[in-house]
Image 1: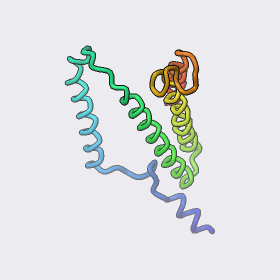
Image 2: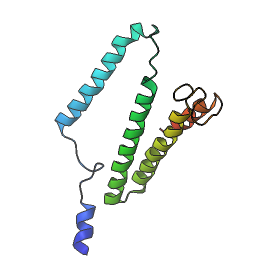
Image 3: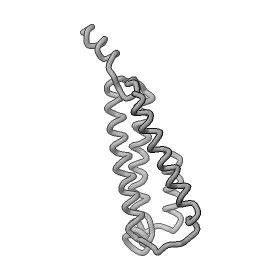
Image 4: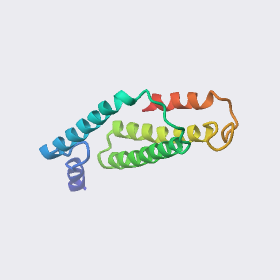
Length: 135
């Protein structure tokens, strides 16, 4: 029993695993590339393009999936190291994923004229504000 507790306290998790210089360099290059692309797009940001009705549900569904995956990974990290902060972070990602589902369903003119929940036009804005407060 003593050997298991020693083994668990020395376990390498996402919070305790050291990064290598190539991993830090790769992360920096990805971040620099994203900043460069954003700066290149900035001069044409004011141009309005055609409406694409499939863009919002695609992006929102992707956000929901990634939030669920992140919550799952963080919850499993909590099971390994038992840090309460990791559990709170996992719960926040789970809440963010769950609150985004009604946002997707309430968005007007996406599935029906007034949204699937037949609410007012302010509901998607309110749900988005609640979602942003959790991220």
